[in-house]
Amino acid sequence: MARAPVAADIEAIPEADRLEGFPHPRETQALFGQSKAERVMSDALASGKMHHAWLVTGEEGIGKATLCYKAAGALLAREGERGMFAAGLDIEAGSTTARQIVARSHPGLIVIRRPYDLKGKRFATTIPIDEVRRLRSFLSLSAGDQGWRAVIVDSADELNVNAANALLKSLEEPPPQTVFLIVSSAPGRLLPTIRSRCRTLALEPLTTGDLRKAAQAALTAAGKPVLKEEDFTSLETLAKGSPRRLLALLEGGGLALQARLDKIFTSLPALDVAAAHALADDLQPAAQEQKFELFYDLLFDQLIRTVRAGATGEGRSGDLAVAKRLMGGGKLATYAQLWETLVRDKADAEALNLDRKSLILDTLSRLEAAARG
Image 1: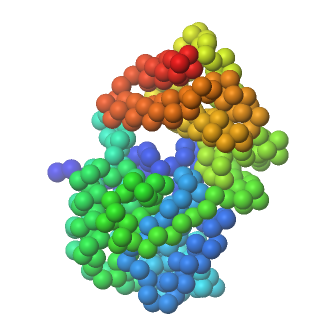
Image 2: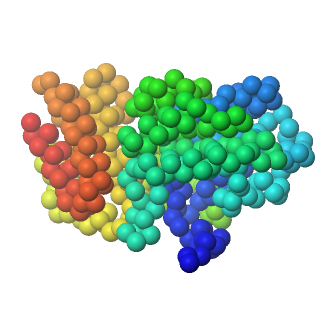
Image 3: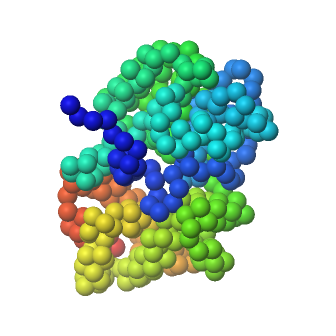
């Protein structure tokens, strides 16, 4: 008979929603820059008219999941665990509920997300229907002493078609005292019927001050050095108000990657083949997954900025110069189509587990072809 997994086993399983080396959103106590959204949710809880489903939207890495875990903690907290924070979503850090949520052992909370294949050593590319089917047994149980159950979906953007339909069925027939907290960075791509059954709560990118505080708090919690002001200044523009993105850039060599991208765009329509192969070699190993994702994140953002600069005549001086050189003669549509093609190619490569080096070289080849026109 197979034994149940112990805490050490659970902790060893990687999490797709964790930035390597930093606290997970469920372990993050302070939420910066989202006081308005936090107040909306806490007011709804205090009023006794908590909506059964919340769609928490906004750019990646700005606190959506952290807000959902805080809301779940407030819902599930036992009497006395909210203490002096009763008007907000905070609960006592050392309370039983707080410890259970961090340990992923609270009976009143279920989290739906992409599973990790221990044999294949990789994450599923989508959330499969079997993950959502776990809701059946969870929702069939009676609520605990706290009277509530919480379901976190992180993120709904990753649900496959069957899983999305299964989630919809649960939303259509919600059991009492159950709250769905659904994370989405692209709500427009969700089923309209899912959106219509949720109360949307939109989060905003962080301002400079809150971005600095959030990044430094995460670095301190991870036992990492203080963020240098010159590094923050260089990273802020690329971070787009997202603490997670800023930390990923900082830890993943984002400035160096951006410099390599700038060199590639500056050299177009010629492509330095040796440099392209060197870049692909650097990003190919499985251990470089976060750096690989960061490269494509920066590349897609670079394309969007350059197209926008070409269309509006506004933007960074470097983007304007590249747009002027490459996007004349009605080529804006070519680059817009290129962005769609590259996004699709990357998604296909991930779904089929194709070779990363080949994908990167093909990406750069398509970029060169578009530049040559």
